[in-house]
Image (tube, rainbow, N blue to C red; front, side, top):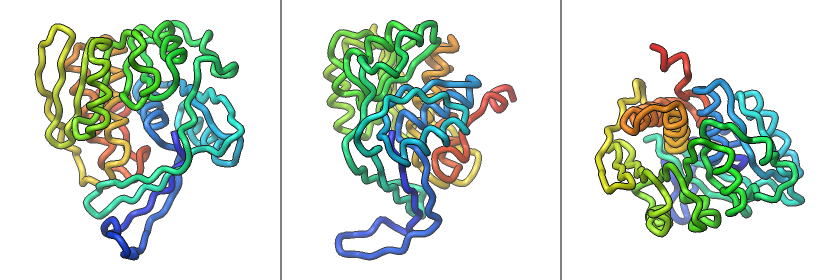
Length: 271
């Protein structure tokens, strides 16, 4: 996760160009944080195991995510919390620049509480080492991961699903190297929906869902999708229903300012 400054611009500047930013605000975000908030809004609560710097941004991250219904279990690092700048243009597309190294939660972290995380219905894993992934596997009935957890994958830990952007060549390359370790491979393609392949080789496509409002900001749509997929599989839904739920999560997030203004909730599921 990162502490992210958001700003809207007419368009992302070209080399040498100066643009004026408006509607600036800050949030704790990144793949782990956004998915955790989406899970909390669907399940009534979620735990985020993460690593944060011993600084103001780390403390503010815990406070803000707690307000959003997430129980944060941080391992504190003697390093700055990672930061990022996100520019959102007038089409709603986001461009992200990160500052500083990722602070990954590790399996040996004394304060992560790995041994207390048993009996979980589902876990979404975005960062950490192989020991952390093994701990998550032992703690969870359903384990979904992202190829961004690069150093943890490829060590023989069985995944129930691996979800990634079909438009991201780096994520596709990483996923290809661990294809035999996942029961379900899901590739998202934005407004085109996406595709999936299961362990038997059976494959199919799923459709995107209409946002139900004007597109505002694409930041967090993919991570909300991953949170929704994790919730669906953890709740015992089939693959098709889990993908439909995930697509709804991504579409709803698109209609809000930043990642948290609009995410699908349990109450909306009941309608």
